[in-house]
Structures are given as C-alpha cells and as structure tokens.
Length: 250
Image 1 (cartoon, rainbow, N blue to C red):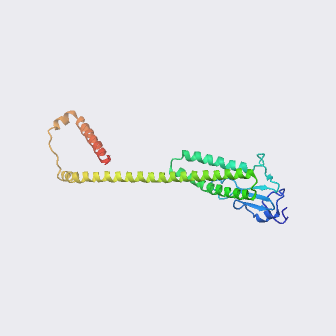
Image 2: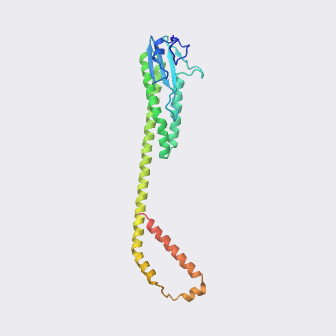
Image 3: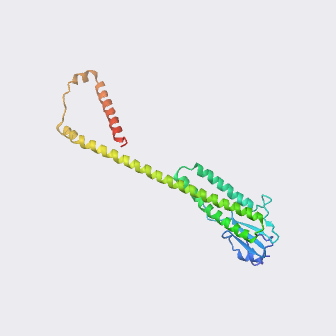
C-alpha cells in the first residue's frame, strides 16, 4: 500500500508493493519494468503523438498470482495487448503514408513521425523483455514480447526505407538541377557565339545607315501591308528556329 504522504501515479486501488510507489516520480519516465515481492509493474508509453515531446504513460501491474491489471478484457480497461495493437495501427498508417509519399518534404515529415516511434518501440521491447525475465513462466508475456520485437523491427525497417527514399529524392533533385544548369550554360554559350558573330555587322549597319535598294519597293507599295507581314512572319519563323537551335541538347 502507498504511504499517505507519497504521491503516486498509480491508482489507489492497486495493492502494489510500497517500493513501486516510492520509485515512481511525478512523471512516468522511461519505459521500464519494476520488480518487487513477486510483483511486476510494467511502465510503457502510448504511441508518440506528432509534434510533441510529451509521452503518455501506461501502467500495467502483474501481482504475485500472475493476474494482470488492467486485464484488457474491456475497452475501458485496455491491457498490454491493446497498447500493442495501437502501435500496430500507427505503423500501418505510416506505411500507407510512405507508399504515397513522392517529394522530399513528404518523406521529411514522415521521418519526423518515425524517429520517436522507432525509439518508443525499441524501449517497449526492452521493457517487456525485462518483464519476461521477471516472470519466465508467463506465456502471455512471451507473446507480448514477441509482438513488441516485431513492432520495433517494422518501425526500424520503415524508417530505413523512408530515409533511403528521402536521400534518393534529394539526390535526384540535385541531379536535375545540375542538368538544368548545364543546359542553361550551353544555351548561353551558343547565344553568345551568335551575338559575337552578328553584333559587329549589325552595329556597322546601324552606324552607316545601310539601306539597300532591293527592287521590291513598288511591289511593297502596291500590296502593302502584305510584304511587311510576310517579313515579320519570316523573322518570327527564323527566331523559332534559332531558339530551338539554342535549346537543343548537346
């Protein structure tokens, strides 16, 4: 029984050894198992919520007769099995998110959720393994421990897959940007070559007012403005051809 002066996180109705009350602080702390007088107190965490560092503690007591509290026989009294099921559902949901992710931002957000989940499932397995060693004849503990190991393994694999996908997305983006920069540099080089060839001629023609008589002045006056439109169309077509030449891949 808890001493009246000792504030405990455990329900007052739990007839646990006083040592459990003394060893508990104001917060659940890390996931672990306490042992005293044949009793086990398993302190676990609920699946980590996104964008928070606070962890919700879950307490499970096994008395000297092997009876677990809460028993997990009703939704109002969830047991260790229900907690493991919550973790399994969270991993399934994140797996679906990973399957749909395509951008680096989506993978980054996914990893932000997976990082605490990987730590939590790893510590969950260690706590249940410690409890298993304290009650080696409890088969239910063995099954829970194995489920916790599968959870930790699944979370770790999902984390690794997401990290590899993020690295690939970043590398692919960097490669695309490098290729785009190379093409821009090539186009600028070609344009500079064209300018170098035609700029002197255009400058001299502008300075000296080069206006050649082409013999089509009368035709221009007769069918105006069709000749001007034809010249503009031809110039536009030549500009398109020049643009395609500059933008073509090397």
